[in-house]
Length: 407
Image (cartoon, rainbow, N blue to C red; front, side, top):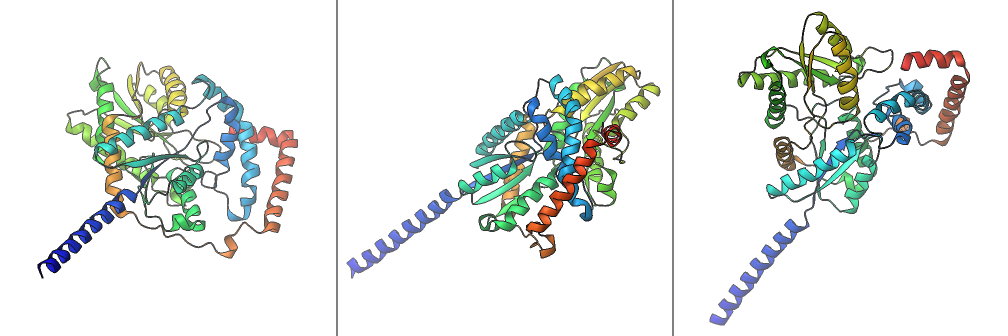
């Protein structure tokens, strides 16, 4: 009798041990991945034209009506060919290539360390939209590593269909076709400009740079954000402008809570082509501020968390020169957040908070009318697109008009 009871207890104990081991095994087997999404940039001058082609071939960058989408790639080829010489000059002026990949890799490593300090072991992946390592490459590696839960973190504080939206669309297209990703729990952090950690980190940098001026209280804080075509906001419902204005209000609110009461303004940079973009434009506002007698200006690149062509060349060189020519005497610029510890720590918190909401993505099944796989449809697009590109390239008058429009 006693032996039977003891045997039962041993069996029960063994069962508990096995259960504990099973649970431990389940914990060990769970592999969490974090996918950082970014724009990408040419690393050498030879990379500039193909990088620009990838950029303009994205239908979220140049949004053509459905009837004219067969022109997407020929048009991208044309634009990238004409813009490459000027863009090469810009990249040459900052060392011959974009530092974006190096900085993003450093941020990925810093984020991994910050997550480990929070007892969360993760694999961090970097996916660039328009240059290496492409988002698709990161996705392939995630599958090879057999990740069981994924957090997607675009390195854009504010959401736009042309930045975070474009990269997320790539992921959604993969999910439609790949059974592994269709069943993978995924959490996407679409925007995070409203997080206290981000807002306070931005305020810290602004406060520090203000202190470098001889009269900090007289300095105007000049937020310069990457622009998007106005139609994105008014026709496509892009929340970017509203989120940007909300972001500026949060940062200025944090500064006011510290007793920093400087005036501020917001403008949009980097417009391309003849269409109307979000206003006011950075270059026009700088001239106006000089005419109004503003003497001290602190530029804040609020769309970017990494240094790249739009901060190092466009702001630091072009806009600085324009500001000084317009009568502004004292110029300063807030650096991008980069690997600022408070910023990285807040990104780690965002990842931890996002994990419980991870679930399988629901995507719309493509209709037959959406398919681009039909051979005749594909050949027709390429045939007429190639003819158009050939005509444009052989017509000096059209080339001249297009060059004046795009440069």
